[in-house]
View 1 (spheres, helix red, strand yellow):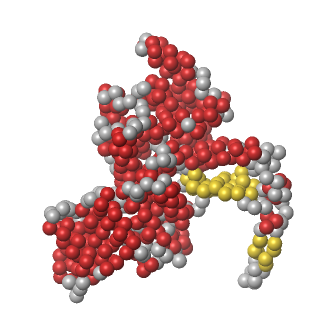
View 2 (cartoon, chains in turn green, red):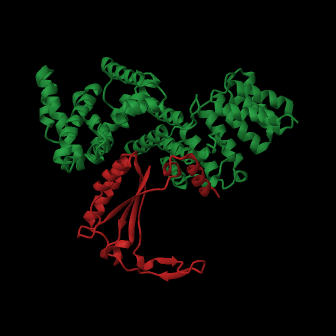
View 3 (cartoon, rainbow over the protein chains, first blue to last red):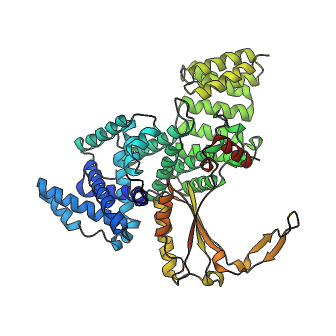
Length: 417
Length: 137
């Protein structure tokens, strides 16, 4: 891509139009790889022509018409199935400005939703789902995705190529699942988004604590999904969760890049706009009148923190209750660990310690640094400093993020009196 | 990065003349498009400046001067705003270009302004720290 003004403008148009373009083309040719190639071809033609002719009034429609002509040429040359060819010829001219308007409410949203279900399909590995979604639904380049994951560009490129081949080979349909399958598949879609968000929110390895691009893309997709699948409570639950967590993005890291824990963050710097959006999303979720799912419950917990003006105002009793509800719909030692922290805050460290010890006895989370970290903190609060020190040191040895390790070692040295 | 699309006031908006149904529909559709693209953060319209208040400090170190609206110069008046979150300046411009003409009678004007973000102000770390410091209470 050239660095000329036209090039950058076309880049921006691509970002806005490419998901709709690829979704619409996939519906026609039923192959996501071919659809992306056709869209890319149209982009290349735009890059050649637009700097001279100027950018058309409706660039999205122009790109779609161009891509469709390419598709028809290609199908003619390859003499692919007659039916597909006919379908294309018939639909080749409908993508006019009026169609765009008419489609805005329904079909384009539906196509995008089908595309999301495709790129997050369970036949793909988790990594492949994330990479393909970033590529096709966020319009990110392979290079951008690679940088976001601190991976080699070739690795990501190959991952995407393989993912597209798998979808093609397994004949994954371009459709929104129905009935019982919908709930399960929607779970996979939300999981991909939250994984993407968390990958950006807290890097699991290396020096980088926050990688904003991934957070922003996940958040944006979450907002898109809330518009195109508004009847699903967990869609709003996840959107709410990401909005509220993102409101703290800038306060999670100190001047020297060290992590700042929730209770120590400067709340005046939390993004009020995102908090407001998060609370509104949670409200939309509640208004659907269905029981709160795991994302909505986590969002409700995040909302409790967001609404506390000072750490001392935190409603730990309510948070404990929400964690209990969460452990019922999503039983997991991680949830238990969080419940332990909330219970300790609400009712005293000894009660929290009992829950932590129960987790330890079950042998869960033995490799997870936050288990000894939480245990150390509770012991510290109970003035059992020597035991606390050992726990912090154990936690530091398990921590994968070097910043986090430093923080834990600092806490260990605080235990020496 | 965040941008504010500022819709400037017009003689109509200042006179409290409601926009036509056609324009309202177009704006609604546009906001929906922004929301479906996941870029819309907030959008609101403001009442005419006749119900506004201006607070100024004409004397350095002196007391504020409070003046009730309406204010003159429609073009200096804000009639509404839309906050968007985008990946580039060009994307913000592209979205702003897609907003319907907010007046239709030759007075429509949209101003696009980037929201202040400490991290984007400077690549120099010391400056960044100072700026961040200013934002802390």
